[in-house]
Length: 217
Length: 346
Image (cartoon, rainbow over all chains, first blue to last red; front, top):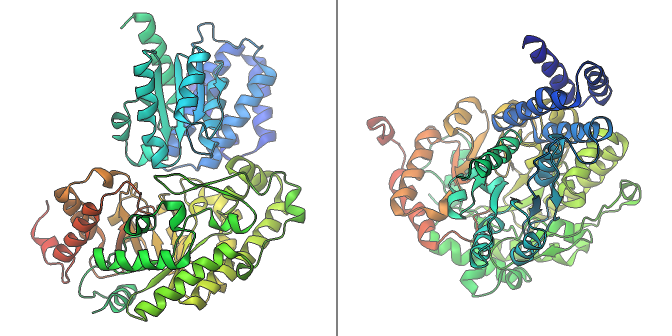
């Protein structure tokens, strides 16, 4: 356990210092020592979650979270995963930036989800509530992640929820972005199912949805 | 005391007659005039009219010439995408590739019809209030403007991978920012609110701010010919308070995510903040009063504090009644000396 912790710490330090060469060198060494699945599950994802948690606590900057997530996604895609990913039970997931045009949060979340071996569709930025509902239903999406930056966009998630209700379409709504960080109660107001406050939460939330689905509750 | 005297006293770390209140309302002026947000911001005279009406209605202590954040990139050839119930989004980035920075030229503020509307609004407000009410001008910091010029991800890549181009962009933005700030001061602005969310520790790690943004802020603020307040626009600043104090700014706008008392205890700067502008939309009169009291209790003693929201732009969704309740609570609980804060711990 201590050994794993030490390896996590080394990778984390390289990522936080944005040192690509060092991060690559550590990752290469780890690849020789471990199989892909344990490397992702025991090293990469815990490190990304730890960095995300550190951001939430004010210890790290978003630039570090972004860089770490992008590095891990690229490294894992190029060196560890085949096209199907490592996850066999991958729910149909999509992510979008509702009405807003800032994609940073979406990019980070996508990178972390893909690093964990899941596949996720990217519905892009600046999408309207109606277009998002239509696309979600067309693609038979089960988990829809919605990122927003501004309050009016966050409030528009209610509209998304209502349209799904009217069409009787079952989908789990996972929301995140600055308005939800400043006011966590907003998640209830827009009637979303889950909130992702930082990179630390996203994989836990997805796995929790999968678990609930399997348990039939 | 008039508003200007009240604000100057608190900025000198003295206690005025009461805690000054900056209701940083921009879009609400459109409601006053019965216009859409997009229509309202087309003409400087409308913005001046809206600001003066809101000053009268809410009885706060400043006028605010802020239109919306993407106005600066509009002046640089970009677009704003308006919506009915909030500030416009910045449209397609004006810098699409890193190479664009090599040939980028930024306009002079006086050549931009959109920025001239801001100057017109500022002049009209100044004519109306003279030196009795501070007029707050606004610039985006050179270090934060690229988020709108090129998007967040590309900007991070620029900072960490293309240092020469990053420096060139900073040099261009610095010139623009200084010229734009000084033009507003010449038109009648009393001080400049210098928005710098990328400097906040929510976005940038302290060491990276020291390496990349700190000198930019120091250079820029030193060339602005008036007082400035560096504003984090909801971002956290506790870990860089010492650095911000060295930029030459006189005030810091702080996040609702941070403890106002902790900031007050650790900061040499005057403090602006930090009512939660998102939660504010659901406050009743009692909650508005409680939040005003909590902020005054945390940071009011000894002056050096102006009560405001945490973001620098009160959301469109906030009801007029809530703003009136805030204003009333400041009048009731913000009177110096603040004896009540020692009498109760509620």
